[in-house]
Image (cartoon, rainbow, N blue to C red; front, side, top):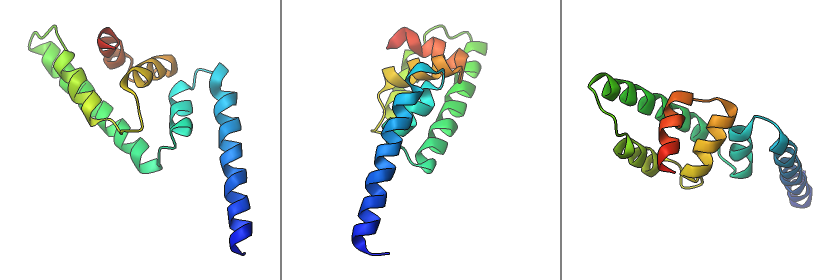
Amino acid sequence: MDVREIAEKMRTLEYHLRLMAKALERTEYQFTKLVVENNLSEQETKEFFILCEKMNKQMEEQKAEGFLNFHPLFQEFSSSLSSKLNPRDVVRACKDQKLFLSLMNEFNKYV
């Protein structure tokens, strides 16, 4: 395969990704759509889920200790997100896709 063929395949893949993202607009898979639209790698997506699991655990621990304000946790979450992602978009998309609902419902107060 020569360079022109590879470049053409890349353009086709990029086009197909744009089509897929558009098709996801009317579904509940809004976080998946963000992954596609923002070109997150598999590793970046895994890191996101690890971050959410960590934040969820911290929030549950803080709730058990009587915390009522989770803005500092949201700030930590926001600063730890991939630079490709907007915290507001992530919270809304995760809520739509029903990912980490308890955590995202709390974070929704700060977006």
